[in-house]
Length: 452
Image: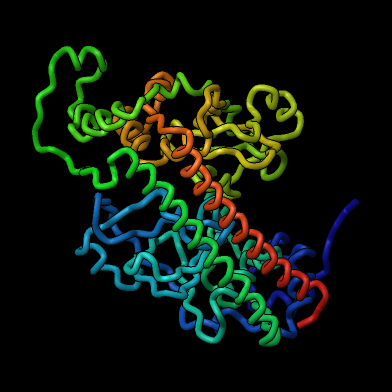
């Protein structure tokens, strides 16, 4: 069956587009539904800015620098699992890149174009990269605007304005003319209040997770552990031979100090506690835009498997691979490549396959999976991952190295307290996600039913 749409000449004027994709029936239907109660985005904001590019020289400390991977589309806030800093003098060259609380930020280019979040003022000083657009609301609440942009309608109409194929980008001029429906104040307030409550749950989630981590470190005597590098140290030849490593980074004294603390707590090798199973790389030619989930390193955080930069596999390939490569509820997913050391306990069934850069860990001893995961995500696991996988452009943490990381075994009652806090943290985050989904559904129902 041939699908087509007829466009009046008047509809072409001002769009500067003649390609058929721009005039898909879906887009035209959405525009028709909201046209009479909408305003162009440019009338609702102070500015839509494309931040300046700079030569990026990242530092261990300095001014926080916002990258696209810090935008979490699932809860449309910022996550800083991966932090980057730039020098103060470099930040001074790009004042237009500085964010202010309440800004709505959008991924401008790449696979995640259109991802949106609200900057809530933390960290206090934050500069955006050139791959991000800064939208500064004026006559509209940024929380409502972000909810609309994350809704089915908003995302579709943003997608309408992209150009380029291998590296899609959002047209700034198109975005200025993007229609935003303006319902009555009561509806906006309901949506904004849902988002506010969700953000409070996210804040609670982070606080509770921090409490769990602090309790773990206190029990291990690591709460005030010094992470600074030592200017010089002596390593015996026997240690070099044993480690099969000669690089100075591997033998930093902070690693040795950490290991000695862990050893005092009845530590065991990870390989004694879990079985490991590696994912698979079917090849990029198998990637699809829809189908069964292909979970990659970029999709995994210590909080969730995110719908971010996702790729999919066809059902036939999925059926062939799922027996060996589909993770099960209760298993720990652990990244070993690119950003090694991110661990997450799978909470819900997933129809999908894990990539080769991820390991499935199945607990085989009497240890709580959430406790074990927190150990890996804390400095205990992170330092050992940094030590083992460091020294290359793209980090690779070998399974044999992972089996030998030390995990402190605290009393069962203490493990339970820590694990319970982690679970409460995840519950708060889940509640936040549900509230934000409800807010998006309100926007979508409002548009579908025409009740503004």
